[in-house]
Length: 415
Image 1 (tube, rainbow, N blue to C red):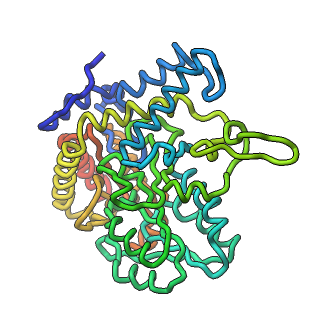
Image 2 (image 1 turned 90 degrees about the vertical axis):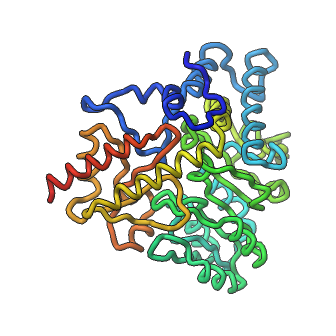
């Protein structure tokens, strides 16, 4: 087994890549260049082994059995919760609720906090750059309650219009802000700490979609003063089907349960039910045990590399990719805000994004093509979709060079 990455300063991308078995694969006879990390990151060996180890050596349901396997699995699962709380600097592990992913976490808040606190005429404030998972749950709630969903506009470079944001908060009717920390479609990194402060001054609660930020930035929910913060393991080099919604303890305590079933109760009779304490009040039924346990080595993988090293590596990739793609006359970048996450989104007027993605795939290059579950962003720029190349700890400049070469092939075919 390859030794774990440890304190890589300066960043040794080849040592990192050695931790990912899939990066040795070929596609259509070409080495894999995986440039779709924003959709779902590849998994290091430690994550893969953690799931395998559970199923081979100590699998059992958790929080229920008095026998050794159940106790061992429960301890490993709860140790992940502790690691997650440390990773985002939550005040207590009980503020970190396990969910299937950020989408479920946002729906949980909309259907619990939202149903209690949103009334007719209230405003739910989002941004034009939100993922559908931070739009649709609020639309469903607004239709049920007679509330209004409004979106803060974005500038031509993809940055948020903060003047418009301040003005919209001034209505006095905004009860919650839902905002992406980093846009999944155009990469804009929002000034969420300032946004949260302004929202709180206006009497609003804030939910931050941190899916694109958690793998790349040092997250401190207490410093941000976020009320809710959602993220998914699979974008953080962890398993699919598991994520976290962080919430301040006082808010979670006041919220009703969302789903009923085992583990979220203290007592059940046909006369009534008393609910469990946090976090279990919101964790009904048998959870994704293996995913929860394997989340911890994903977090430890990020921590061993270090946020400073990750940021420096990805900033270099972003600068290099922006410069190289900007040199191609047929490529138009979408989203050029001064503060960005590790992705580039672009169009070529001569070819549809899906055609571009297909041609790149034949070169072994995996990119995402389409609206990226962010159709309002595409409408804002008057396009059907973009090609998105997104980077992670294992991405190299050579892979960006291969992307540029692939786009030259697109120009040869469609030019």
